[in-house]
Length: 295
Image 1 (tube, rainbow, N blue to C red):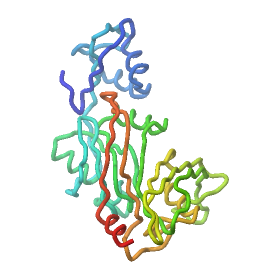
Image 2 (image 1 turned 120 degrees about the vertical axis):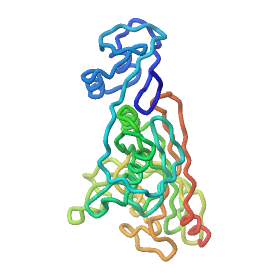
Image 3 (image 1 turned 135 degrees about the vertical axis):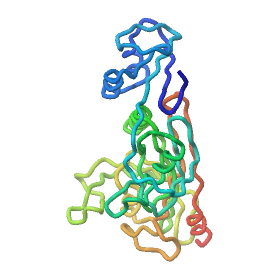
Image 4 (image 1 turned 180 degrees about the vertical axis):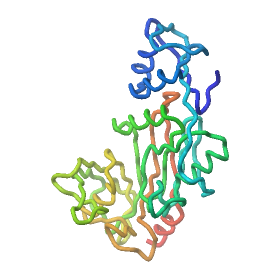
């Protein structure tokens, strides 16, 4: 049995444990996913189907088989800038002004449609599972899991805050502090369902920023977020008096760029299959480089 998008192999590092104990305790597989693997007879020990309560020895190999799936998004040939791909993950440098998920108004012109087309072309029979989210106008690193195990593991890292996500943004005005932490809760505006704002009864939201370069009337910032609230960076920047240039919701349209100048450029994580730390960098898009040149 060889490793693939559908077959994930784990090395047993200690004798005397059951398969269930190895997978749950040693590799963090959720109870829900484990029960599904067990029910569908997708557990293997040294290449043969096995039961969950079998005791294993050091050096044994446990394999889990991810079933074939059908993606429901309409496959459309949309350009994708793939900056990393392996058995488990596709990582894109998302172009600006494109929606990630299909909606009522965007049913066949989203990143999901493009990935569905790519999966069909490469004979990858999997659902498109997004690990992170980016607004339509935000560019940069977008992570897609190719199987349920990888998605579960990456989502767990997101929830535990062990993934490092950094952004570059250009804001109005000259920011005084070289660096700061914005720890202010964010919630929905009652009369504007699309708009978020800092409010006492909102959800915890923590944004760190560091000045990269100051211009006459603007500042390039590096942003790191510890939480992932909707529009978090955009809301926090507006609240401190430095809204993102081109942000039509929290600032005003700009003649210099046709979207918010926000780019997800760094993503550091532990790879679910190998356990190795990986760092992915996405280069800044040309519209933000042009904006900086004009400033």
